[in-house]
Image 1 (cartoon, rainbow, N blue to C red):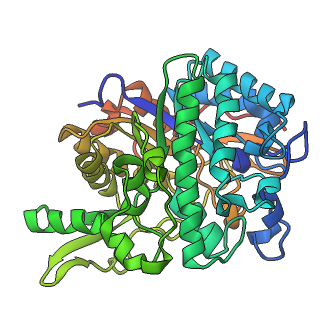
Image 2 (tube, rainbow, N blue to C red):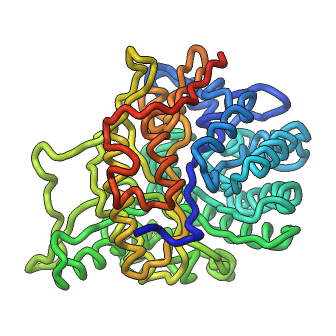
Length: 471
């Protein structure tokens, strides 16, 4: 068995999490720069000022991508690196960096998938109201046009927003992510509406500016519900639960996915949010609902659901069950049922734009980084993704999060998600065992997933031979 012949094997990262060079070459500040200066906001007082120094080391990093055999790399553009004030004057050194990065990727045979917004909102625009200001949709469209004007002759794959549920909820409602605000529910939902409006206007801007064929999607996180059994009743309970918007949190699927794909907010969400629902002007939903070419979705964990006498019931986590270092449940079946339910509902090709785990990684006495838990995690998850594809779900690609250990937002540098270990004091890169394992998976187009002996077993200690000595 193998994956489809043209399956896209990739990895992902985000500008603020890896680039560094926060005050270099004309880059303006973003809301994360400000939050990192707030006492107690980030674990260990860490910042993204240097991060993985990818801004200076991108050639080294692309060479590591080439060695792994990545078919594609999902990067994000730093909005304030391109437009230091968020709008107006373009920073030529900022766009030049992305020019060079795209060229380097293409020369290495790696297709760039560009995400326009991965949370680094320009501070200058935040001070003008940020996403709470309706003009933010126009600001975002202007920025999208600038990037597309410069890169669309070589970039054909675009994503607008990354995880709107997260940056709206954690950033604007709970205050634990940038910009660190604790707005009312009504204000937070208005922030979300303006972000979705920005998504639609950015899709229009990229299509209008594109100088070559382009495919456009976006990348919400999926709150995946999986059936406790394969019975028809449990499957239907999981499906219903996955697309319900029936509580007063901001973490659901349909509120964020239905408007871009169906042109309306879900009725149950409107009922539960009530007077907190956002103000929607005439023409807004038509602007938000632009034709998309694929559905990007970030999937990490999920909840098990069974049919109950009064509707779907959540099955409690098994006592002592598998957990990642972030204390997220290991739930491989989410890559079977998440894409299945999303494809049934929205009928678009799917890319898994993020999936991975934080692990407690360090350099062993032999100089290598052994991460058997990550190998086992990926093996389990990719086997489940293979089941979804085998059942007819149109999954086109998989992007591991992440290519490098990096700045994990409020967790600072405590959590390591990378295929490549980063020694932050020296910036030395060391491919982990999982990088070598993933290399074999890619080279075989997934066949080794079904033939364990072909690429070693988890914890086998295979060497990469690609340890980076640069400092």
